[in-house]
Length: 127
Image (cartoon, rainbow, N blue to C red; front, side, top):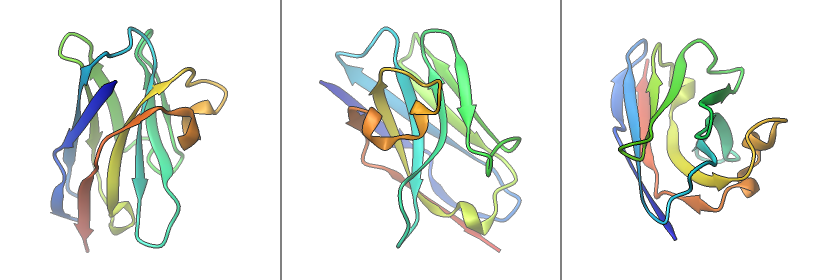
């Protein structure tokens, strides 16, 4: 079992920044796809970014490319999502996910590829 705990959400004004953290514990993988997803009220959960922990390859949704950066600290079993130039459209609950076998080939976008999920952290961006 892997436990994931997100933190770092909050309320910011448009143009601001937040850094989300995901702490992994338990029987963590040596290499796997870890992702950040978000879900706004009434919308489907969508992939935002992912990182393959084995080689640091990163993947981003077009809507966040150039504004968000995913990174990891393997030693601390942490994954981060730095979010800059936030807009009200970024308002959502953000979830950390782990256990994906692959990131490449678009697999990272598929929520069903992931085995473990955190409880989420809310991000609210006001205009």
